[in-house]
Amino acid sequence: MSDHSVLVVIPAKARSTRIPGKNLKDLCGKPMMAYIIETAKGAKGVDRVVVTTESEEIKKVAERYGAEVPFLRPPELTSDTATSQEVVSHALSALKAHDGYDPEYVLLLYPTSPLLSRERVEQAIALAIEKDADSVVSGYYDKGHYWIEDKGAWKRLYPVHPVNSQYQDPLFKENGAIYMTRALALQKQKQLLADRVEVLLMNPDENIDVDYPEDFARVEATLRDRRGT
Picture 1 (cartoon, rainbow, N blue to C red):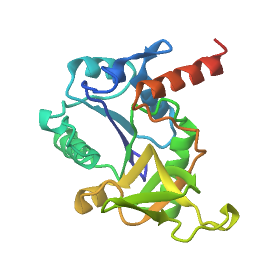
Picture 2: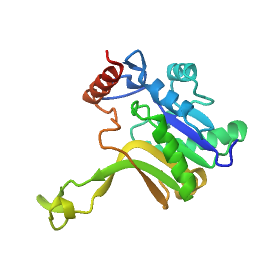
Picture 3: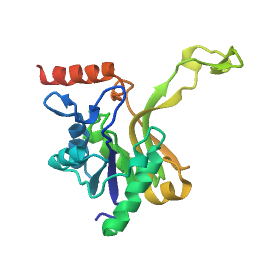
Picture 4: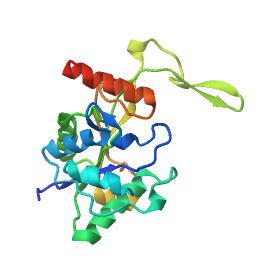
């Protein structure tokens, strides 16, 4: 084990409302979840790659692509109300009970980010160690103008006072690709990202979070384009 042990946790449940069976859905020749497993397995600095699931079928596929599945997730942590923090905390507790494994960092990666690169995972790990950060989250700068509905009326949320874009301070928007946190901080603070956070900037179109059928189609088209097929 390295001085800064890093556990990758990949949550993959069987049920999916918008894209039925999406984690096992064929994406250019292999299950969608296989992409993030292979990315994590190939990244320097990662000690273990664990998939947390309630499904025996997903367990078999995950193990086929090199991930560990040393436990099955309890049904109550597969509901739509279960949070990622709860799922990751359970994985940490289960691994400690299973074989005494207690990593410094836990890196949450989703099967719904099949385009995420190994280099970005390595950059997140390096950033956490270099800055001695409690958490690292990926995303991009956003200079959008935002409004919110309040008591039946609309009001400007950000920027409060409109300015030309070159003078506007951008917001940072999470892109759903990387969430990395000290295991101890996650367990103590009961939140996915701890208080001392560093951000990993990515291009806005670099990650596609597969939530809807049109997202899956975009990822499929991107992969086919990369392969020239």
